[in-house]
Length: 120
Image 1 (spheres, rainbow, N blue to C red):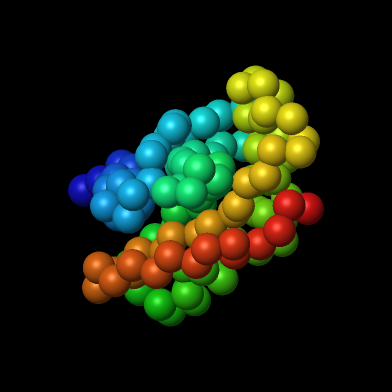
Image 2 (cartoon, rainbow, N blue to C red):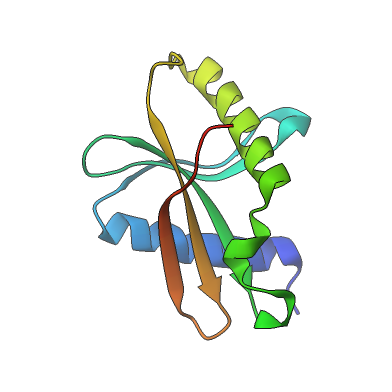
């Protein structure tokens, strides 16, 4: 039996591997900004754009699509945590980034939604 963190890490590994196969460079995984939040994957896409990627997994669809779980509150938390990442790594507010969501379903299918939400 695995705990939720181990399960999440496994599916984040799948998402990171997928991104690398698509030509992304993984800059950091599981970036934590203290109690403010965590960013699952921070990458650079093939065009050089900074991409903040939230990974979601649902074993069954009874609780809804994994993409639906990235609600407005979660989006705000991701954006707030991104601001800490920017400050810590010397990015200016004029440095563009994109927020993606990768969802992995229990059947192993993967969905990558680019530009899933805007900086709020």
